[in-house]
Image 1 (cartoon, rainbow over the protein chains, first blue to last red):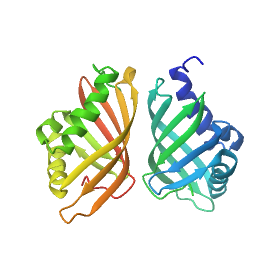
Image 2 (image 1 turned 60 degrees about the horizontal axis):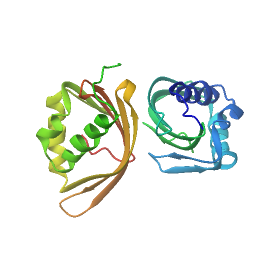
Image 3 (image 1 turned 30 degrees about the horizontal axis):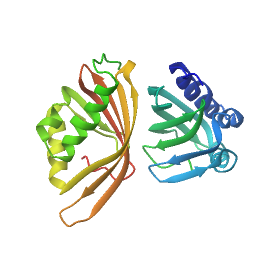
Length: 131
Length: 132
C-alpha cells in the first residue's frame, strides 16, 4: 500500500474523529477505528478495548454526560513513516444539567494501520472524562 | 507558534533521546541545558506548571536531579515531524529515591524545535508531577 500522505493524518483526527465527537456522530467516530482497536486513557490507566465494545460504550457515556463538547487549538506531530500522529489540543465540555464549562489541555497519540486507528492513547489535564 | 528547524529526522531523534534524555539520566546539567534556547519554555501540561526561560528550567532540573538517586528514561516510541520541526516521544520514567522507593511514570513529551534547540517542551504525565 502506498504511503498515506501528511494531510490524511490531520484530516482523520480533525475532520473525521474530533468532528464526529463534537457533533455526537458516533458512527463517524467509530469509523476511524479498526475493529480490534484499543483506546487507553493514560493519566488514569483506563483501557477501552474493541471498537464495538469498549470504545463504543465509552463514547456513549461521554455523549450521555455532556450537552456540549468542543475540541480545538490543535498542534500536530505527524509521522507518515511511522503511521502515527500525536496531537495537542484544548477541550471544552459542559456537563448535562449544568451551566459550568470545563476546560482541559490534552494530548492524544494515534497509531494507525491502513488509514485507521489501531491504538489511541489519551492524556488529560484534569479528571478523566473517558470512563 | 511555528518555528524553523534545521534538524532532519535523525537529528531530531538524537536531540530528544541522546542529547536531552541521555544527559538527564546522567545528571549532566550543562549538557541538558545546552538543548534549550535561552527563552525556551517547559510546560507540564497535566499539572499546569510552566518553567519559562533557561534560568527557571535550570532551577527545575537542579531540584529534580537532587530529588532522585537514579533517573532512567527508557522504552521510547518517537513520532517525528521533520517538516515542521516537531518530535513526540512516549517513554517510561523510572525514578528511585534515596530510600530505594521507585516511581514509574508513562509519559509523553512534545518538543518544538527552533534551529537546532528546544523552543517549547510540553510534558504529559501519567502520575504526580516531579518537575516542580
